[in-house]
Each structure stands twice: as structure tokens, then as C-alpha cells.
Length: 255
Image (cartoon, rainbow, N blue to C red):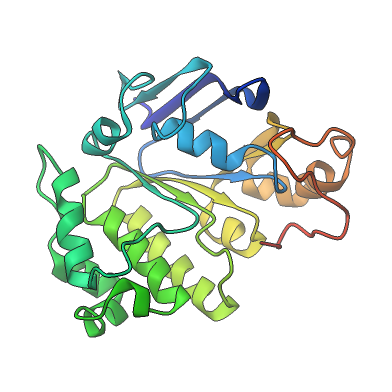
């Protein structure tokens, strides 16, 4: 049974279609990367899967259960956790308070003990009495991941966790996310950082203009230069109405 199965997902903002007929699946303990330029529909897709955006049509199954019409809170309680791109932490909450508040989403299963979170991110233990707003950008990203992880999820959606971070911090996140996956958690990773994508993903889905442009193994994608084709090739003339499009100056490793 797949951890996640998405079938013909379509997401729209009024008349503007951001994601059209997207289908993919993720197996248990697998890491799948959603790649694509800015405006390709990646964030819209994961937010719709997590219940934060309405779906115009399509079906989302999590651990064999149809969650297409469930609320975001119900989806979180079922064991699917989203780490949003902009973290969305409460700046006045301390690290400890942030983790404690997050355990309410672990209904029906035991949350992870804080000790396991601090083992993964030792700096958070050192900062546990500090407010989220006083942390560095990298520490805030660690806390955002920790907040999702303490709910003991079966699937983790990570929306561009390396955005705006220095390369050294990104490598710390690579190691932490790899350990999370080794623990049996399935991962869907939205990224433009190809170092992160190559290090963590087994398979990838490349989106362009809101559609699935290519899917296959990360190794095959690199060998065939599929990222170059999707970012700068035949889909270049059809930027997504979600906004932005892309140019040849925006390399796949960009934020």
C-alpha cells in the first residue's frame, strides 16, 4: 500500500489553474522530490494535499484512505505533516512551547519524545528556552521541521526547506532529513536546490506550468539532464498562471 497516492489533482485560484491533472504516488519510507521552476505549481500541490487549499478535482489517498475532502486539521491528525516554506512559527513561543503545542496533532498515536527531537537537532536543546522569533533562519527551519516531526507523522511534506539558507545549514538539513527517512517516514520534498534533491530523493516528479512534465529516478533525471530540459527547454514558453515563470538565468539550484 502506498503512503500517498495523488490522482488527477487540479488546484485553481478562481479561474486561474495552478495545478492540472497531477498524479503520482509515494511508497512508505520513500523520498520523492517535486522539482520545477518558480510558479510551476509545487507549493499549490503540497498545500492542497495537506488540505490548506481546495481541490477543484482529483483524489488524494493517504495510507489507503481517501483524504480528498478532509480538513487540514483532520489530515494532520491522521499522520500527514506539512512543513511550509515560510515556517509559520509563533515568534513569541519558546522552542519548548512550540513543540508542546504541536503534540496536540498526534491524536491516536504517541508523539515523539522531545529527547529524540533534540538528538536530531542538538542546537534546539541549547535554545529550548528561547523564543522562535529570536532564532536564526536555520534554527527556525530546524524548529519548523521538529514541530512537524514531534507529531510522529507517517508522511512529511517539506516545502523548500533550504530556501534562503546558507549552504552549510542546508547540509545539516540534508543529514537530518536523511535520518528522518531512515526512521521509516515517507517524504515529499519540494525543492529547487539540486544538491538537496540529489542527496535525498530516489524519484522525482518535475512540474512545469502546473503539469507533470517528467517523472523517474533521480539518477536517470541527472544522467538525461531532464532538469535542464524542464527548467529551460520545451516548457519555457508556457509559464504557469500561478505566477512568475522562469528565465535561463534562474539555475535549478536557485531559491
